[in-house]
Image (cartoon, rainbow, N blue to C red; front, top):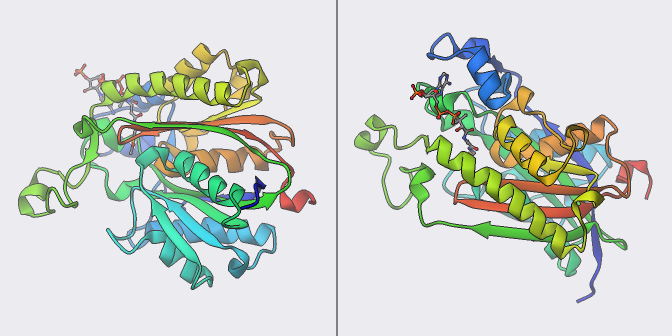
Length: 335
Ligand code: ACO
């Protein structure tokens, strides 16, 4: 197979209309705007409407994406959705997305690795293009975490939001993909999990009574793990790409907690202007957070061709990963 390069030709995002502020949360939780802001950096999050599923958000983001480039959905070879809040246990959400976009018949699959989903997805999609299997892939990080969060638990209810971010990846001569460093440790799933609804525990009445069908998280443990893995994965991705921290123009991290981002950025010696953070607006949208942050940065004109970006994420699994990427002009800016 021919070795070819890959680039992000377009990026877009979508968030549901309903905004839930910290103040709103205080109406039913023993919490405060001050606590949430100082401990997480979050001010608002978007929550999907009752009838709105993850595929609806993914489709909205993908439509915006394809419109930007006048790309017919059938010109895309493969659709990948990174999500831990799929519409159903099966079929894959990506199949529903591709068909509703009008691309019935195209390859479509989901990646479920919680908040690391976009990083894993970017690595897989880039590899499919660089190895010549496909020329054009739509990769979407999409989540409706509001559907699986325990709204009565102040330790988790405040953290999560819904949204979708999408990228169009295209084969090209130059290569944007510089390196990836992915990892996992599944030895203690209880640290961060939804226990019921899979093959180990049914969502029966007892499970529902114990809230086992909702997110459980050991916050402090995840916090420490997150800071460590963001630093080590970024370091290894840079090393593999033969780059140093000073070569990085932007760090686009998973948006789980501003204190996690700040601690990792400080250790990595990244000044705030190089670190993309929009957590105040969306909270933690899991696999959607990195592409939403990228989409906003591009809209704001922050990122220029030639810039080196490190995308870095972590989450349930436990899992983590970083991708080093050299930005190229978008399709809408001329090929
Ligand atoms: N409002 C007010 N008080 C609160 C709240 C709240 N919303 N939540 C917890 N508290 C209280 C606790 O009860 C505790 O009180 P106590 O000392 O009387 O027992 C106190 O605040 C401190 O609690 P901690 O859990 O130690 O607070 P911490 O500073 O660690 O912040 C947080 C908690 C925000 C959850 C933090 O630990 C965190 O961000 N962890 C990482 C989460 C994460 O990254 N998840 C990503 C993965 S998601 C995925 O993969 C799907």
